[in-house]
Image (cartoon, rainbow, N blue to C red; front, top):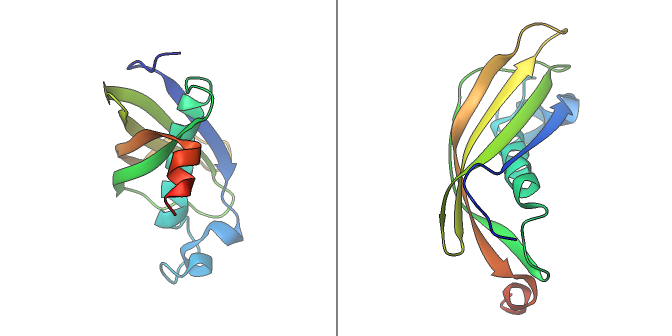
Length: 129
């Protein structure tokens, strides 16, 4: 299957104590840690490619540019989404965003940015390690 702009993926997580800046060592407050948010955004890019890669292929992250705009408390439901915006051979660029809902309230945009992945042959990639 060919990867084309517009392919989308998303993941949903509820922030728990293990996802906080305090727990991950990226700060000293109990809100969603930026490293965890970035991992969720990358997971959304992987989800977007889930059924598009040839057998034996995978994708690896190569660039991340994310603005973490708002804090998410423990218990917030976070949706991370990704949409393919550009394809150049093996390079795939995504527009990413995340929003949270607290106690069933309205969604709040908490992050935007771009993630770039490169499609590789899994065995050849692992053989280089």
